[in-house]
Image (cartoon, rainbow, N blue to C red):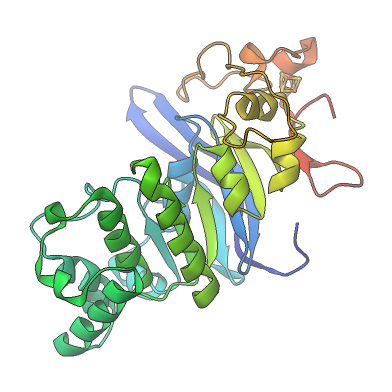
Amino acid sequence: MSDTPPLLETDHLTKHFDLGRRQVVHAVDGVSLAIAEQEIVGLVGESGSGKSTYGKTVVGLHDKTAGSVRFRGELLPQAYRPADFQVHAKKMQMIFQDPYSSLNPRMTVGEVIGEGLRLHSDLSAQQVREQVAGWLKRVGLEPDHMSRYPHEFSGGQRQRIGIARALIMEPEFVVCDEPISALDVSVQAQVINLLGELKDSMGLTLLFIAHDLSMVRYVSDRMAVMYLGALVEIGPANEVFFEPKHPYTEILVGSNPEPDPKSERNRASTTIAGEIPSPVNVPEGCRFANRCPKAMEQCRHQTPELIPLADTNREVACHLY
Ligand code: SF4
């Protein structure tokens, strides 16, 4: 963990969805995480682990069920009203996984990218057009693309449009929700490099949500591992990737394709036995116990807390430590 004071901090952030008939989806259950200015934290976990819901709750797209989010120490609203987006859109933005579904197909690219400025700034229409033209260039597109529609672009170009739409607001903190997983492998690196350049030039702080652990290790300072709505491990990205402590992280890393054949880590391909339990019926004790090869009796009834490991920068939630 960095010594710098956090730019963003969540304290026991919780998001539940009430399905009625006493059924509640425990999508995010008490996640405490502090992200320092200009830090990149990668958030990994299987589908259904709550990563995206956490990101959306942080930026105010979901109301918080419990817990809090602080930005530069300021407590953010439990539920955003339209006026709150006006204030906070400039601080926090989100880049979505599927660039096409997140772009309104009936709006031109210029309208899509300039929408935030039109809603949340005092700029004239001409000033917004100028900013949009500048941002199209900045993300590697042409200013005259602003009169075209999203369907006229490739997946990689649409993600560039999505990036321009988020960053034109000049946020300080950005949640990147699986920003490359819908793209061809050939363009993934280009989009990652673009994000890296913009992160450096704008001094951004990023929460990078992804299921590709190799990619997360490559782009992130720290890696946080989420399972069934809760964090189970967090630490420097390389350490978590090469020396996972939590049994879930160990298996998750083992099941991740290793892109570098010269990698020192000699990993047999591993799969995680069983299904992730339903977030409607969260098991008692350790949430991972029904799939954990190292489960002990106490794991079935005692919930492990996320605690710092002595003499490390790691935190792990497991009774083995
Ligand atoms: Fe496995 Fe027990 Fe650790 Fe959970 S607490 S990960 S069940 S050893």
